[in-house]
Length: 420
Ligand code: DSN
Image (cartoon, rainbow, N blue to C red; front, side, top):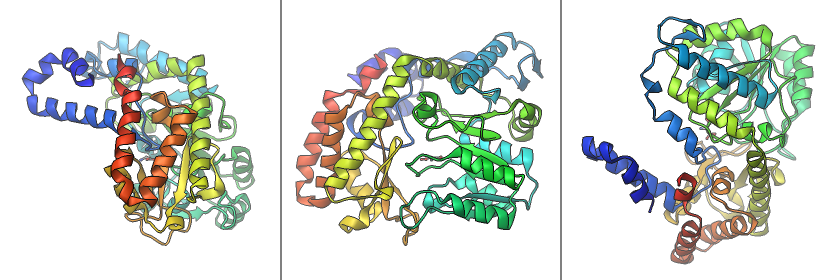
C-alpha cells in the first residue's frame, strides 16, 4: 500500500532517477515493516514532509528577515518570522533562532558565542548520557575546549548535583552544559542554573531529546533558567531534521552573528518552513495528548522489561526513553541490537553509566517510544513489544515466532496511515 501511495505522488522522480527512487521505496518499506524504538527517531508530520519538498529549497536568504544579502526574500522573510514567533510561543521564549541546520550546529553557535579556544566547559560524560558535542574528544567541542565531565551517581544513576557544584567550584568553567542523549530522567535546570550563577558561568541546556515533552508541559522547561537552550526539531517534536536555539533577548545579536555568518551560510528555507509547520502542530491539544501517550508507553516499556529480568538503568524513566543494562541477561548492546534488528525491532546499542565496554560494543540498548506512539501504539501494544524484546533476547530459538508477531503488529498499525 505504502509503495502504491508513494508511486502515485512521485511518478516523475521514478522516471528521472529510477535507482534513487527504488532505494527510497525500499527505505519506506523498511520503515513500515519494523517496529522503530530508536529514541531519537520519529515519523515527521505529513505536512512537515510536504513543506520540505517545495521550491523554497531554491531560495538563497543569507542574513535574517528584512536584512538579507539577496533580493526576492519577501515571502521567505515572512516564513522565518512565523517560525520564530511560533517557537517563542511554544516554549514561552523571548528570542529564538531557527536557522541552525542541526542540533550540533546549534550547540556550536552557542559555544562560539560565549567561549574562546581553551576555555573550560563542564558537561555530562558520554557514558552517563551526554552528547558528542558536549566535549567528546572526537568532536570539535572536545578538541577546542578544556572539558571537565560530571557523572551520575553510582548508586542511583541519577545526576549528582553535588558533584556538579564541587566540580564547578574547583574548575570554574565558563559554561555548564546540561541535557542528554541517553539520560531518561528529569534534569533539574534550577539547581544547575543556581550553580552557574554562583560561579558566574553561562548555562546551556540541550533539550534535543526532551523538546516535544517540554513543549507539551510534561517535562520541566529549562526556559527561565538556562541562558541558552538548543534543540533538534526531528525527535519528539516530529518536525524536519534541523536545529534551533532559544535564549534570553540579550543574546540575540551574538547568537545571530555566530549562526550566520559565523558557522553557516544560507539558511535552508524549505526546512525552516517545515519547522514552522511542526511548531504550529505542536501547539495543538492533539500534540499534548500524543506526548502524554509517549510517556505512558515509556513507563510500560520499562516496567515490562524489568518484569522480564532486564535491568533498567536508574530503575525507570521520566521521559520517552528507557536505557537497558544487558549485562543482566548476559548480552552486549551490540549483540542485542543485532538480534532485535533480525526480528524487525529497531533499537540502538548504547553505553550505560560507567560502562566497561567501548561505545561500539556497549553494555546497553536505548529504547524510545516517540515513533511507536506516532504510529498509534498504546499500552497493550507497547507491553507486547516489550515482551517480544525479552523473548527475542532470552529465547533465541523463538526467533521466527517473534518475527511473525512483529509483522502482525506492524500490519495492524500501518505507517502509511500517518501519510494518507
Ligand atoms: N544521534 C542523536 C541520538 O540518537 O540521540 C543525538 O544527536
